[in-house]
Image (cartoon, rainbow, N blue to C red; front, side):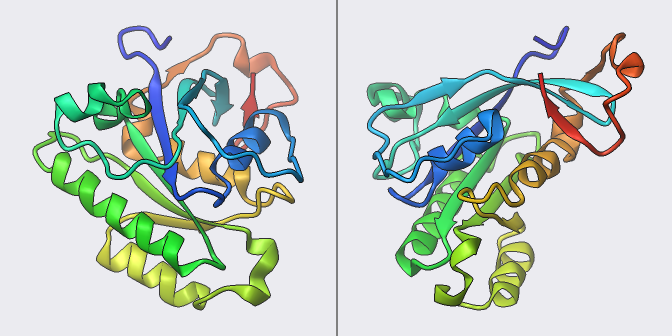
Length: 206
C-alpha cells in the first residue's frame, strides 16, 4: 500500500458481454479467452504497476451487470456486487462499439455516478471505453462523434481498445493513472531508477 495514501481503487462497469473482464485479463496477464463466460460475481484484483518511475498499488474491481449504481450506503451494502462502488477512486465504463444499447447503459451509469458523487470534494476520473475496436466496420456510430460527446458533454475521458488483440489496453490504464487523482496515490520507489528495462511513459505490471 502507498504509505499514508492507500490503494487506488478502480471500478469497471458496463453491460454483459462488452469485455470488462477481458480488458482486465489482458492488462494483468496478456490473456484473452475466445469463450465468453458471463461475470456472475464481483471479483477483485490487486496488482502493483510502475508508471513514470513511480509505483501504484491498485485495486481493480470487476463488477457484473447491476440494475443501477447504488444511490445510498444501504443499497451499496445490501447487494454484494455493489460493495465499495460509491467510494472508488476512478471508474472505467465499458461499452461495445457495435452495440448501441451498451452505450446507453454507460450513459445511464455515468449519470448515476454523477448524482451520487456530486458532493465529493475531489473530482473522480471516469473513462468511457469503447471495446471491440477490431470490429470497426460494424460500429454503430463514428468514433469522432462519440469522442466529442463523451469529452465535451459528459466531461469524461474517452478511449477505444480491443481486448482481443490487446490494443490500447495499457494506454487505458496509463491515462487513468496519469490523471490528477491518480498522481495523489503514488510514491517514489527506491529500486525503480536502477531497473534499466523501465523507460519513461511505460507502464509495467509488477
